[in-house]
Amino acid sequence: MNRHSWLFPLGLSLLSGCATQNKTISIDYRCDNDFAFRAEFDEQQVRLLLPDKTLTLPRRPGMKGERYVSDDRQTLFLRKGDNAVLAVSAGHGVLRCKQSATR
Image 1 (cartoon, rainbow, N blue to C red):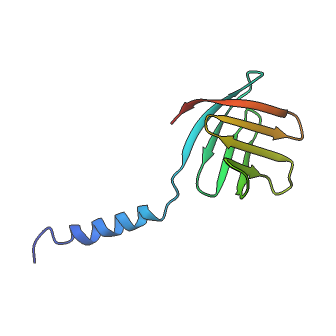
Image 2 (image 1 turned 30 degrees about the vertical axis):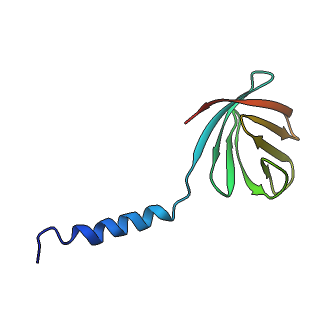
């Protein structure tokens, strides 16, 4: 047996593990009133890292762009291109935001 024959099965198992993981994209946003936050996207949801809390919103089908709404319908995040709208019923109101950096 070749002394490197164990590498091939190991490589296949590593590659198959990578194929099942969601790709996450992080984007920083700055809004009209200098409110800043980070959004982490995968194929099914967005995680909003706000200054005072973190919210996870599932992606909802609908209009052009991307739409995320909390299960209690208290938070809405819309994204299209470099622009976004964040509506939080408790505290922040409606914020118009622009992408400031991509990671």
